[in-house]
Every structure is written in C-alpha cells, then in structure tokens.
Image (cartoon, rainbow, N blue to C red; front, side):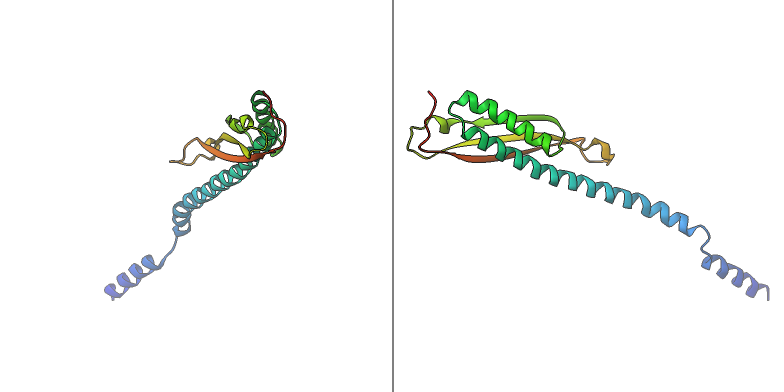
Length: 153
C-alpha cells in the first residue's frame, strides 16, 4: 500500500506544471525580442538603402545638368543632402563622390556623370549582441549628359 501511495505521489509531481509557464517564458522571450530587433535592423537597412539609392540618382541627375565640374560637384552634394533630409534618413556620416569626366567630353558625344553616395546608418539603439553599431551603405547612380548641351571650359 505504501508503494502505491509513493508511486501516485511521484506521478503527480511529474505531471504537475507549477512554474513551467515562467520557465517557458524565460526561454522563449529573449529569443522573440532578439528576432524582433533583427527584423527592425533588417528593415532599417533595406529602407535606408532604397533612400540612399534615390539620393544617388538625384545627385547624378543634378550633376549632369551643370556645365562645369565645380558647379556639378556643389549641386550634387546639395541634391544628395536635400534628398536624404526630405526622406527623413539620418546618417552618422555622409559622403558624396562625383565623377564629372563626362562634362569634359566634346559636344555631340555621349557622356555620363556618376554619383556615389555613402551613408553610415546607426544601429546601436537596437541593442543586438553581435550587430555592429553602424553600417555603411553605398549607392552609385549614373546620369547621361545631354550630348548637344554646351560644356564648360
């Protein structure tokens, strides 16, 4: 009889789930939070990349309509900064490189101007272990220079 009571008591202990919800939450919750933070980081990188693409296109187009390399450089810098600002992207550092070699091509020949925009996106606020605090994103765009437009000298 004692053996039966002991076995029944032991079986109840094994079937009891007191505290198991807390243990499950302690195991699952950190994984869910990390997954959410990784999704946010991925979304931030993808949307920032698209916005940087648009800024590079704006910079290249703006540079292609100017006649001199100096004017094209200044206009492209301003266009990229304005585009990033209008789209609400905040870069910890930004650089715009313009290849204005196409502005030196003689009138009547096809030429292009290329703009490369680099933006460092902040990720440190996500508190993800193993993720860098910032990621540099770069985009390059090319715009055709009107082949019959007068060029600067």
